Image (cartoon, rainbow, N blue to C red; front, top):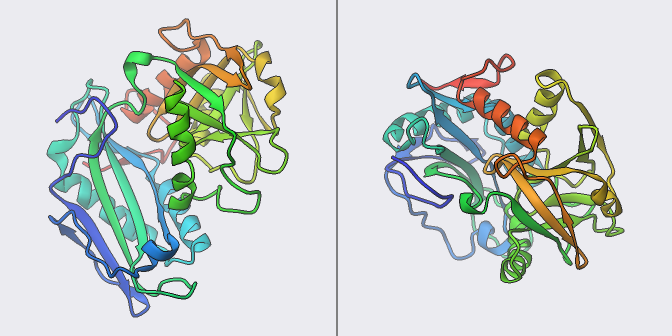
Length: 334
């Protein structure tokens, strides 16, 4: 099985687990991709939902592995707490993960195809509500789909624009993976595409001055003295890839890193820029349009900047078990 883009392809099986009467059932593998709900289900009326994203890889030796799924389980627990939803126990999360991957093993792209099996755990409020209140019944699902690159590989580096819209409020839900965060980004994303850009870069909603992240990934910059800089904000999603990149840059590549509040007025001082996230892994940014002024970044290393390429190669080698990563980073499925 192979895939050349990032789009949904229904797999034979998905894991389903339901929460009723204050507890989770045992869960099961289902062949039915459809969910039947009452028209007044909380997910429809008040968007009570959250999700995660991770990948399974097929190594050169034929093993099947996942990259740091323990952090996905922990982040989903944080999202559930904020959205007033029951937490999926970590051991149950891993049980569902192994079951759904092995049940759909034939859909995992071959080693060397640049593809992977994307895994989407999500939870929705299913009981009916009318007044504003959280659901009392929930459904947790874990679905999979073979995927290729998130951004069009033909384009190599990607183009961003500063959005006129806000992504998240300082004390809102930007720090969790709630569906509502991504719903609000759809309209600005449509505008960006119509104007020839791949994505939006959002600024803080209080002053519209400090860099936060794009609609679907964290952003980082590389200075002329090869220092990695990450925007710091309480409303940025704590990306697992971002945390991994920071550690690998310091411990494997010997680079200095810094997390701090970053003004949009200083991005022309950096030589490279990249996006990082589960879907994109590392995507090179070629330019950012700042109010009509286009800031250009180095992409001379096969579409990447030199340091971006080193980071991408390092993290991908660990994901495919071609380089030993830190203890606990690789979960062996089979």
